Image 1 (cartoon, rainbow, N blue to C red):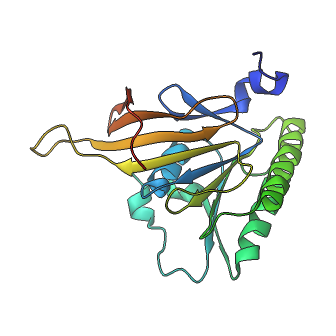
Image 2 (image 1 turned 90 degrees about the horizontal axis):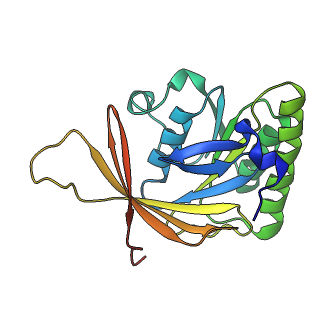
Length: 209
């Protein structure tokens, strides 16, 4: 199956891990206990400003020192919303503007199909605006706890910590990265091991989630 012309453009894809990519101009979901880590790694692989939208009432805060090894915190524009609907509204506006190549929204519950469609439309509008300015089209990421479940997302990825290969201390982090849903691809799982000098991605059996 041939890809749409938009997907063939060099700026239409964002690296996820290894040769795995995410389509820009669309909204994807990251879930599981390591979803923030995965979002930070994607931020590190991207360029330009990043809009990160969070619930203003949540006690947790993003830690710039913890983000530093993965991505430059100076690129971060932190937005805090006072209500659930404010999170989605802020994400729509950020995507529609096309001013930020990466828009991340932390949600506490999966949105229904209509809000997700509105986010896709905003991302498509932002992609058109970005290309008129010779800029990178926006990528939308929804962060959700557990197994997620936002309706209508382009893809859904789950990441969780995995045991180290060594009983001794090792300078690597190990994760299980699972593609739970994608429009044109089946579910699949990988062992992701990250080191200061790079990452290693190997196929793995699908976990029992």
